Image (tube, rainbow over all chains, first blue to last red; front, side, top):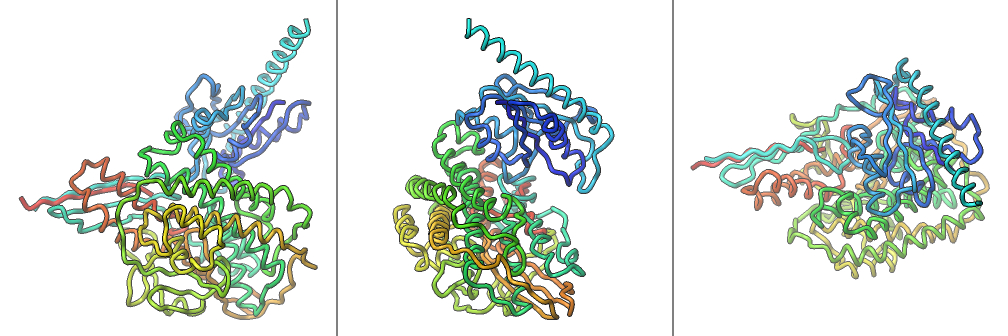
Length: 162
Length: 432
């Protein structure tokens, strides 16, 4: 089972990007893929990751790059920049959750993260044109990831059968 | 004269944004100011002209940590204005929902935000490397609170099932079973945590506080009760503004509350505990003693223990309510609006939350007043700082900042509510 988690809120401009990506992937109704929309609350992320096989997370990020730029991280290999995934001064968000999950042994076997550089996170702002285009690109990229994971799994199953 | 100033730009592990300014002359702290720079949020103005039914959902948006408290104070105040008294299963469900918020809010603060201070870690991520089991326990307890809020409220943050007069939908008794099991497991975990937390090293720091909290005839206070204090105050919510006032200070966007002719006062877990120990369940009282607390606690650093005791109580109370729950005939009662003024105070995780509404003959809101607990605690936070950090005023800025932050975190302040945290500026003046 592959779990796709879209993080965001619909009330803050480009912060909806993760949710939009998740909805588009969910609409494809791929077997073996479940899609979850979440706020980015760390405790909920950790709970979702517990015992999961493969998880792909998509979230809008605050970066110095151009709006709509895509960033990819493999949690087993890369360090997530905390400022990319700023969530709250009180709660903990995605970057902190990855570190916490490492210490607690709660990381999924494979955790891939796709970040979309936002342009505006103002209350009530609409999705920007740049990030709207990036949503389509992120969906294609995550679809490619899913296809590769399924193909890899089929290969290893065939090798096991031999 | 030598002057030392310390500025903490952003206080971490609190809700919202504020800075702290400390000034000391010849080692004596002369100023401790919480300079809250989050912009005012004008919720009271937003409410004017809106229908009385909208207040619970609008005010819930003031806070993502304690939205249920806002929903509870808003519904009770509206029902007070309209002469309605809710009883039976709907009243029990409200108390159950409040238990969920106390559990999730307290667990987050105890394990993720406050415990790292006592163990010498910058944050819970560092703490998790050495104390993974305790962090997992915190997450498990918080999850139980989240589950309860989501089950009854429709979702964990900003629940959507609360309305004036009751709920939009009441749960079926048979649907509670998995939740009840989760709460029982978390209660066991929390009892164990009380033992562990009791072994932390607490500064030997005691203050003579005026504690202000609700007091109910037979319950540990959440939704209902008179406002009382250890100085003899005993009033209803409608008399609140006769005794408590908000003041503007030039350095903060948040109003500060004072008890008229008394000054700063303290609300929240420590106040509730000191004024209501006899209303705790036997299990919670036993856990308090196991953690090393007596019936009176005047050490603000031990608020982490009191939060644990309240968490055990909330889990215990939630299980009791679920066991005795009977489905209501209807999830809410119908209310015909008319002109009136309504008042309510309920116990948010951080202390009493006061709402007042004036309605016109159609139920439209003419005026609203909200006093959140962090506004009420601000002055006492500053007084604690003056008393506590003087012993560290000669230390380097990092050490002083750490002690300041720990002292402020005793209150689990919610700055977003108050403006509706921490940049520290310390100025040290020395005459030599």
